[in-house]
Every structure is written in C-alpha cells, then in structure tokens.
Image 1 (cartoon, rainbow, N blue to C red):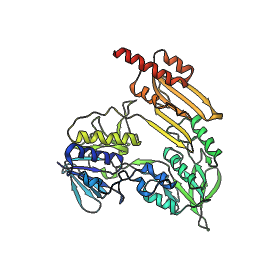
Image 2 (tube, helix red, strand yellow):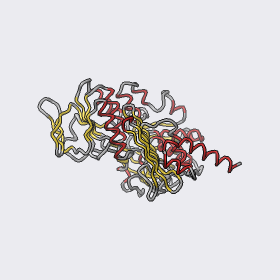
Image 3 (spheres, helix red, strand yellow):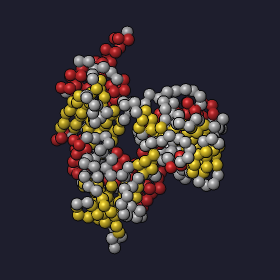
Image 4 (spheres, rainbow, N blue to C red):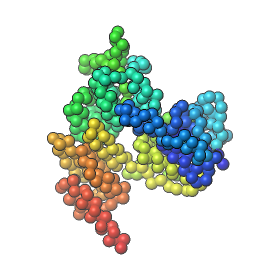
Amino acid sequence: MSFVVVGAGPAGVIAAETLSRMGHGGNITLISGEPEAPYSRMAIPYLLAEDIAEDGTHLRHTDDHFEAMGIEVKHERVASIDASGKTLSLESGGSQAYHKLLLATGATPVRPPIDGMDLDKVMSCWTLADARGIIENTKEGDNVVLMGAGFIGCIILEALVARKVNLTVIEMEDRMVARMMDKTGGDMIADWCEAQGVKVMISTRVNGVSENGDGTLSLALEGKDSISADLVVCATGVKSNMGFLEGSGINADMGVVINEHMETSVPDIYAAGDVAAGFDFMTGGHDVHAIQPTASEHGRIAAMNMAGKRTAYRGSLVMNTLNTLGLISTSYGLWDGAEGGDESVSVDKDRSKYIRLSFKDDKLAGVLALGVTQHVGVLRGLIQSRTPLGAWKKVLMDDPHQFMLAYLACAQDASRRVA
C-alpha cells in the first residue's frame, strides 16, 4: 500500500515518520512544495535574529534521516487531485499515485488588496526564501514598517528589533494580537513595545504603498500622514492552501473539513495541520487552529488512522503563548469569555500583569494572561480536564491568582474519589 503525504511541515513530517514506525517504510512519499529540506516556519524569526543558521530551522538534522526511515521526499507542487483514480497531478507535469493520501499543505500569507503590495521591497516573512530577502534588504538603522500585529506579526516584530532597525508596527484592528488578547491585554503589549522603542499604530489602515525617488517606500495611511520606509514586511494573515482541491469533491470551508479520525469527505483522503478544519475541543464545531502543537498531533493521529489503527481525536484547544520583547502572553480555550459564564479579572498595568479567567458553570472555560508565567500551564489542564471547581470557583472569582491552589485542591479531591 502506498502512502502519500502532501506538505513537509510538522504535520506532514510527523505523519510520515509515524507511518514508518508502524512498519510502512518504503511505501511513503512526502511531497514538499519548497526546494528546501523540511523546516519549521516557527524557527524563521530566530534565523532573522541571527540566533541560528539556516540548518537550525530544519525539522530533522541528519542528511539521511528520511531515507533511513524509508520516506521518499519529492520537491513538487500538486496541481490537482483525481480522487476516483487516486492520482495527484503535479505542476511539473508528472503524476503521483496513492492508496492513502494526507493533505498537510499548511497555509500561505495573504496581503490586503491595495496598490503597491507587489513592490520588491514589500515582503512577507513566511518561507526561508522570504527570510533571506529580509536579511539581504535590512541593515542596522533602516526604517522598517511591519504591517500586522497578530500572533505571527508579533513574532516577526521581535526578530526585526533584534536586527536593530527602526521599527513601526501598523495594525488595522483596535489592539495588538486581536485573536488572542482583549483590548486591555493588547493595549498593554503595545505600551510595552513603545517603551522599548517600537512605534505602534493601532486602528490604522494602509491605503497604498508607492516608491519614492530615492528608492524608499511611502505608505499612505487613512486619515493620517504618510510615512516612509526602507522596507515593508507584511504579516496581515494567512489562508489554508486549498487551491488544488477544485473538482476533487473534498468538502472545504475555511479549511478542509475533517472528522474525529482526520478523514475528509472523500474516502482514503485525510487532512492535518493548518489546512484542516478539525473539531474545536471547547465548542465542538469545526475550526482551523493554526498552531504547531495541533499540527503535530493531527499528523500523528492521521497516520495511525491511515494505517488502519482507528484512533479518535478529541479536538484541539485554542492555545497561544507569545513572547513580545520579553513580555509573555498566554491564551487558552474561550479566552474572550463563555456565553452566559462568569469572569474574574486582575489588572496591574504598572507591572504589566493581567489575568482574566472565564467560567462556564463551575468549570474553567478560558484563560487570558499577560506577564503571568509561573504554573500558568495548570490552567490549560483545568480547562482540558473539565474539572468541576466547586467552592474553588468563588475563591478564583475573588482572586484569579489563586489558580495553583485551586488546581492542587481539585486534583486531591479527584484522587480521593478514585481511591
């Protein structure tokens, strides 16, 4: 039986390796759409900051790793799928047959539909090729504009600061990291960045980018004066890579819709990672959780099901941890509140500390934390275990910082019940 995995990010690599460990080495093809060894996009900022060399981004660090596991790596791009014939058409003109197919094609950056986004000095930061371009086109003291202050943008932000450029961040939303922080937390991150020399412009829309006569760029801003830059880095979001699915019959929405066994709507085709719309642990609905832990687990579970070992996936939890110039922010689950639930909030702006707990009945449903790092992982445990808090809910309502005591007490109660 031949197994084909399309996409060589964490989901695809872990899936291929899992299939190999289950005894299918020699029948596994891993198709990578880039001419690089399989690498982690999350390592690119460390390359920009010159903390690692290019090979430090590689997911595996021995030259014969995949060959030794019986995994053939092909550097191709898939043009289309013939699901009835179980064949992939490749952009090079060739084809690839399969018995079981995993789609782990990830996502690709999107840019706002404004003039000038195709200029040479407007770059994304998504691939190794992008990183090389930013390194070649920045030097200390350059004026750089970062468009987008979401999760990915804030990771890039830190890398650009490490390159010692003069950085301006422009965000269209009313706060930074709007998909993991509320207004209070987002504003606190902005204040932290400003205190370290980064100019932050929120609620600001770029209407267009043009070239100046001296080779710099000019950004026209809605309702504000234009600004100049030596380079613009665009981090305004991504979308799942699904263009090649047209005519395949695969059900897709914001991503490829999968069931608890990672199966798509077409037999023998599975999906994992940033292209997959899987079950949300908290809501039970389908969503794309574009985070590496989810991608890794997706890949492992998909491979087990492809190999005939039926394994259900419970669903992924929204969870993000971000380091922005030394300020750690975290969000888990329904961080923006559970419908009809209660909230407990503690804010200390002077010390850049903020914690907000969201409850559904007497269970913890979501967490948002800023500058709170010690034991914060136990909050994720309380959410995923759906632990009844009982009397400890009132304690946390009065003081959300008591979460470690609540966790220990609830764990002891559970142990007594089991005994």
